[in-house]
Image (cartoon, rainbow, N blue to C red; front, side, top):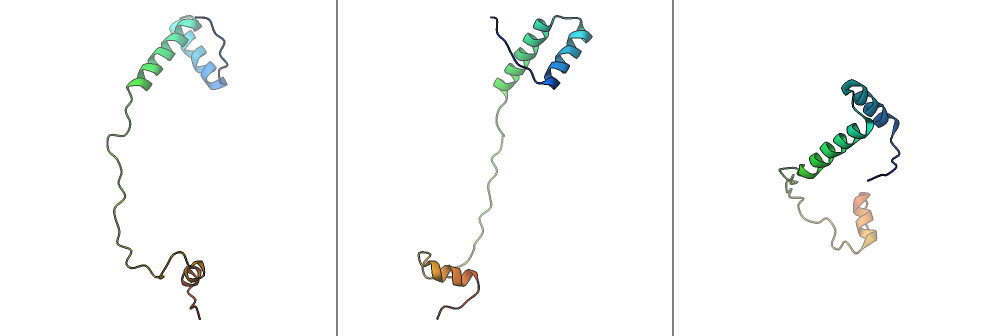
Length: 82
């Protein structure tokens, strides 16, 4: 398959370095890199354990109703409603 790719400068530099080090064609280096990377991406699994947030008792609600915005703001600002 023939296609055109735009490579980031760092990726192109790494490809050229591997190409010269191993004496292989750019096509062979790109194919091997893609093959290895794609296989690794397919076999990687997510985290083996799930993090769970521990439960904490927050005590009783400080306001009668959370629907009463003025009361909630008064408690949050440590004011007393009259």
